[in-house]
Image: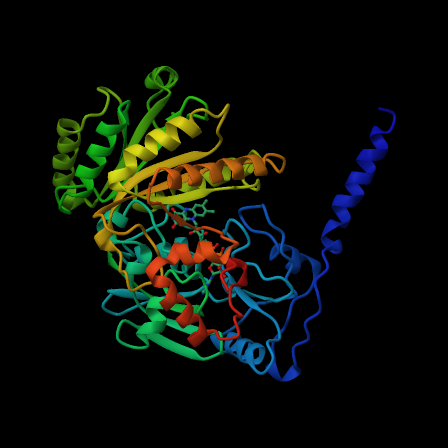
Length: 502
Ligand code: FAD
């Protein structure tokens, strides 16, 4: 005990010194490139971590490009002759396990290239690769238009989500974000600046969409726009029966635009986790806590219908349809009427809350999966009930909602489970402490093992494999095209090495 003040002083000195101890290896760029390579401890430290907070990967330097041409010069130089260093585009670094990192190589800070230009006919926006989706929304909604497919969280970059898929509650109707892109400007691993679309350089276009940053750096995306509604009626309904819950979800995603909802997701309240009842009226909150305690799991169906004043009558019909035809627990429906922007940006409020509690910058060993509709009950019984619910405690959210498979384009690199018309999107989004990361990761491993052993045909999303055979299995019949595209567009294997594919 007598040594406590000394220990505190030592720890304070260590924490203070830490950023200057992060040492990067030296990269020297020729003057003729006219590029500034940032190597100061704060730039290096910021590019060494990501949202997952599980890995630390130290780059050699960071560039903040003022134009796509600068990225092209960097990649032409790096790929010329002997490979000089690897390169990773970094949007917001909201990856989970170093996917936007590069050991000893160069990080391209894409946030330096941001901006939105809306076409005269307002049918699309040309968006720079580092732009945040929230800024696309601000710029477009101001003019009465909006993209049609959203991730739950908008403080992620265009290039980052288009390299994965960009999924959320509008996918069942409009497809993932990658299905709503008309054209891209891409700088390949050889430094070529190419425009591409389904008609022009289509191999590159389809490769890059969901391509995990492997074939080129997206500097511009032409994003489809539609009318921006002003407001959203936002509902949550509770179920104690899983089959009733999924049956209603599946029915809602099969309905036509006007008659149905515009957004649909779902989450689980589990008795061993934190149950956030704040969406519901005060008078119902303790009843909900009791329901969760007595049932173990309560299923939360979440939907929204967007509207403007003139379309308000349709809303009445949709509310009527929800209350008359769905099988939620009587009395357990709650509705909020919010601005369209606030609805789409809803996770920001959660971020602010978690940040204020010091719970945002913690490890996030998240597991995201696609599960075919025919196996969702097996998944529920084998994983949710037999694994998750049997933990002493769980932290974070579990999302579970269906989507229509025909909204995906198989020519793109993104992988999703095949064969069935409906696929479930699952997010087991646990927070951890530095000490219990291995425990949560081994829980995730056991979930994957149980799925494999019981024949549940999952695909992972935002995954991080370290073994080649896992990647080959992940891409299945697309693997051969995926690796051919790598040879074609990034033969020196410079790009996004943090994905650990090549
Ligand atoms: P980064 O982490 O910076 O990069 C991701 C990958 O893309 C890296 O390999 C990187 O090298 C590459 N890359 C980045 N920019 C470019 C570019 N311009 N050109 C080529 N390659 C590039 N995802 C969903 O789909 N739906 C959700 O609802 C969702 N919710 C989320 C909620 C939270 C709180 C968080 C933290 C993440 C969520 N995500 C969701 C995941 C998120 O979409 C991905 O992690 C995405 O990659 C983050 O974008 P980023 O700009 O931070 O990308």
